[in-house]
Amino acid sequence: MGTRPDPEPVYLSYCTCPDAKTAQSLAKTLVAEHLAACVNVLPGLVSVYRWQARIETDAEVLLLIKTTKARVAALAARIETLHPYDVPEVISHPITAGNTHYLDWVRQCTANNHL
Image (tube, rainbow, N blue to C red; front, side, top):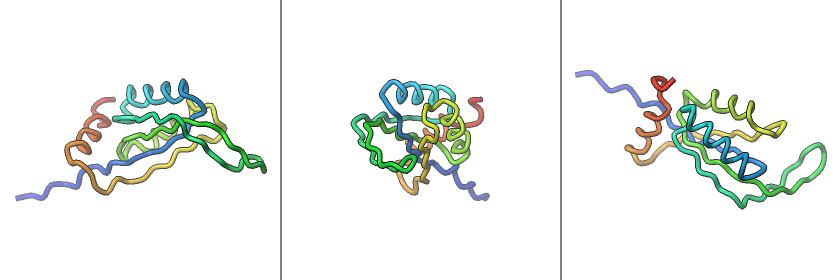
């Protein structure tokens, strides 16, 4: 009897966008290109940050992106290519627990066989 290999780790990535149009476009592209299984688009975010030696406050839209560890680098690179910001926020965290069927679905949607 062999042991089952550990499943591909699933990650949650965050990305802020300047507006709903940009957020929707990015979300659809990431899912269409199998870089993400699902992207939640959350409007109504207010970000306070330092940029070019000034404190800024802006309305933004947050993307919650479900992907796999194998796709995180390609996901970040694709966002950087498409995003209007000079330095787009892309932060990724491993998901350490969750609904097994949902996590398997994320893996299936982002698997290499979709390329």
